[in-house]
Length: 212
Ligand SMILES: Nc1ncnc2c1ncn2[C@@H]1O[C@H](COP(=O)(O)OP(=O)(O)O)[C@@H](O)[C@H]1O
Ligand SMILES: [Mg+2]
View 1 (cartoon, rainbow, N blue to C red):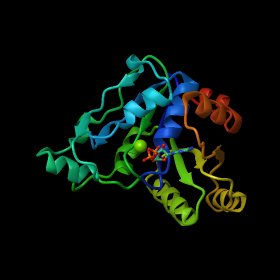
View 2 (spheres, protein in one colour):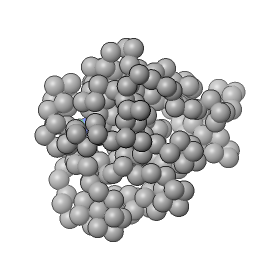
View 3 (cartoon, helix red, strand yellow):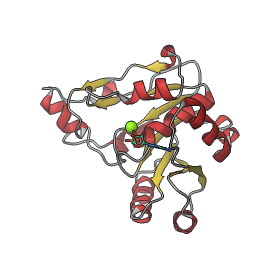
View 4 (cartoon, protein in one colour):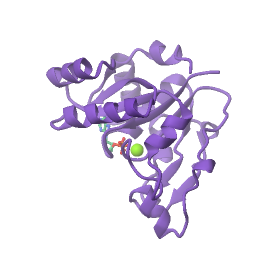
């Protein structure tokens, strides 16, 4: 079986989709966003397709497309549905797969289920996306502790943002989780610019060689 990754992290709006676009492009992988909350703006799958120049056939359709940009448990309720975890099984695809969660690790899918519960069942290595700005040490270490508590496999941390060496160092040191690299802020976010930044800052072989 080829490599599969879950892209999660500390928070929403930290760059998971941009990172996923870069990784999907670099690996030539499939991309799946199981639950999309909010359909008025460009969806995450559409962003990945555009920014990562990913062919349509490598974008796996979402299991849930919810109208309201809110926590999935609430978006689902507002749409009059309940998210059934049985329907959130990673798809079988002919190649590597990048799965992006919604928001952060502990975001609820229903009254009883958070994303971390799914990740624990899936046993697919998680890439922990973390900002480099103030507040990230606490959030990242909490995430990693919660993942260990649930025996979720951790592939590594992908930092996103301007260089902050001391922050990155202390997170790696205290968590014992490796840094995969840091995606800088790219002023002109294009497919080419993103691809270049990813190649310069991450070793694609680490991802390509990963086996579940
Ligand atoms: N490396 C980056 N360089 C420049 N802008 C970025 C970068 N990463 C994210 N952004 C911008 O930040 C916003 C949130 O990013 P996104 O990937 O959608 O976050 P998330 O998936 O974690 O919610 C978007 O407007 C995106 O274009
Ligand atoms: Mg996203």
